[in-house]
Length: 123
Image 1 (tube, one colour):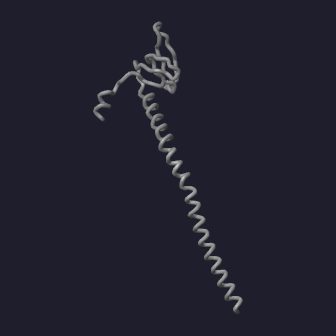
Image 2 (cartoon, one colour):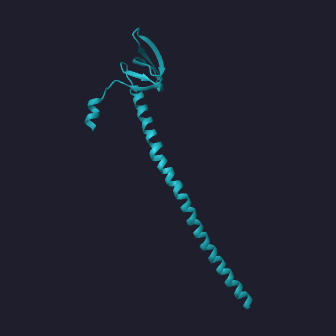
Image 3 (cartoon, helix red, strand yellow):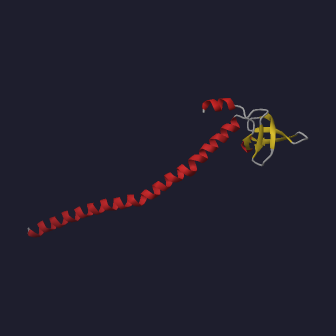
């Protein structure tokens, strides 16, 4: 009888120690993961979010291209849009008025300012 009481006390103490050890283990695990979570949030805020914003502005600029706009391609060719298709534009460039067909994704910059009064009114 005395043996069974001692055994039950030892078992209760062991389970309490195990529960306390598991809680401490979870705390240590959270402390180890916290810097990783902070690093991921930091990377998102500094790198991914601004890149997505820039891509969105580029897409908007390409969608708003019009005939007569002066544009620069990724390769550095500058010209005026003379024809616009669904996914290509024809630009006229050079003194001899050469025409080049390029994909719209290759347009890096629109040098023509269309909506300047609207932008200044928004600010």
